[in-house]
Amino acid sequence: EVQLVESGGSLVQPGGSLKLSCVASGFTFSNYWMDWVRQTPGKSLEWIGEINTDGSKTNYAPSIKDRFTISRDNAKSTLYLQMSNVKSDDTAIYYCTTEGIDWGQGVMVTVSS
Amino acid sequence: ETTVTQSPASLSMAVGEKVSISCKTSTDIDDDMNWYQQKSGEAPKLLISEGNTLRPGVPSRFSSSGYGTDFVFTINNVLLGDEGIYYCQQSDNVPFTFGSGTKLEIK
Image 1 (cartoon, rainbow over the protein chains, first blue to last red):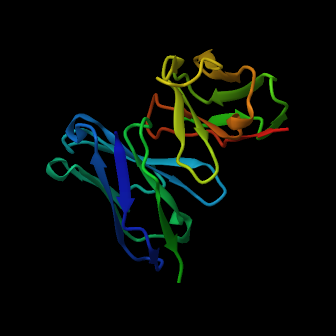
Image 2: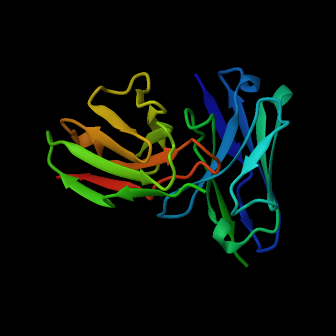
């Protein structure tokens, strides 16, 4: 059974940093591109970015480019989202997903002073 | 960036009726459109992927059509368990933008 488990969500002050993790199991993690998607409270979904199978290529949404970094450790079957210089608009539930096919349960990030 | 315009924002249907949701894209995306269902408190679930391909285990009551810039998602014989929010997402070019969602209520 495919499982994606996010962690690392918390309350963070504007301008601060946070790193989310997503541990994968039940499939060969290194064979799949991985994505991060977020959902603001009561609103739609926003695709944040993706990373290729070996971590050598990433693509990002303009809204977070240069502030967020996606990386992965295939030996640990783990995907990461490093968030820097966060803003109130970054308050959302963050999901990791295998290109939309399987999803984690999501982790809440709240940006507030 | 490709903009995805989804309509309607909400629907209220009776059991057994047919549901149609539209997504229009600002650029030609071939048939690179995905459709998701999200139930309250849950992560989205992929129902239909690129090429109007029904995902394994998804009932054939769900279908989609379209190519280029105009796409339609259909639920035939809607059931009470189909309540939720439905999203389209284009996967032709980054960023992979989503529609704003359609909230489906079953009367």
